[in-house]
Image 1 (cartoon, rainbow, N blue to C red):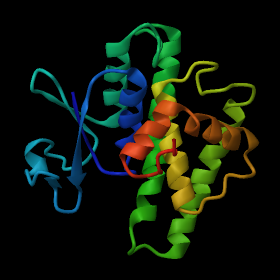
Image 2: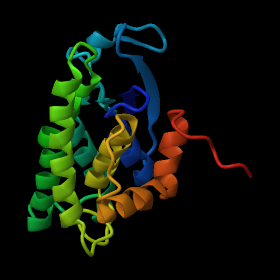
Image 3: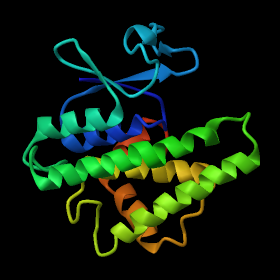
Length: 206
């Protein structure tokens, strides 16, 4: 498999999933402004949407959209390592989380990356994001991860949103459960490996 990514973008979520999975994969860095890969290829010929993530499959196909990609990765691993089995109530709960993160949290961050928007408009979306984080904080009470004791692909996605919050100076310190959760996920060796690989943190010295 081949993951097309941009450092720190939402493609970090499937990057974390791949890192946690133990499956072999290659990384291809994409310049989202130029719409080219690091080799100079036209990225829109790989993904017509021009956005990351995109996952090149072994059969030559390409899968896009983060929530779909991370579930494919989890299903390739199997054994419930990164997602509950298909058809179970727990799997629908996982999909519920992935949809919430994608349609509510992720989309609310979009305006914050637009320099043309006013500070007042951006504050509106920051307040909305804070409300969504408040919901997640309550749901994390007494749990290590979104699904309970087991790390899942939804955790990698929420972690990316928490990194974006830090980047946008959205304070989550009032959410004790969420703050502890961010540290917990960020301490996972495979998560750190993905961050180091994208240049988002320095490798620990030997």
